[in-house]
Length: 154
Image (tube, rainbow, N blue to C red):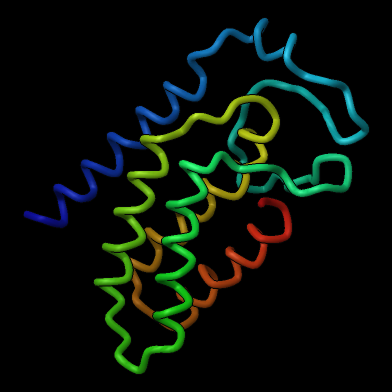
């Protein structure tokens, strides 16, 4: 019963995030953008195969209220890696709790927001995969995801 509640909560959170992130007018988004060599604006898609790009060679700034939850997840992953007790279920619970908090506090807009989603959507899938198949390989993919995050975001 608890597992289905967690899945329903995650699904609901993703739906709210998708709606809230797209609730701003496209005209406002266009007016706030500054053309750069890395800015290519098309419709807002969350394609996990899209490559994350830097902000003119610099890392994207993630809002502090959102970064707190990302860093909490990163700390959980780091602690798990150094712990001999591999309680995957507890790790998944911790990660999903912070994902729920992260998505419910989505305040970013524009290209920084879009680039963060290029990392976040596949990361959420990795967490789901770890829940389905608790293994070192699944965990390693999550660990590697934070290496990617730190290359593109601050």
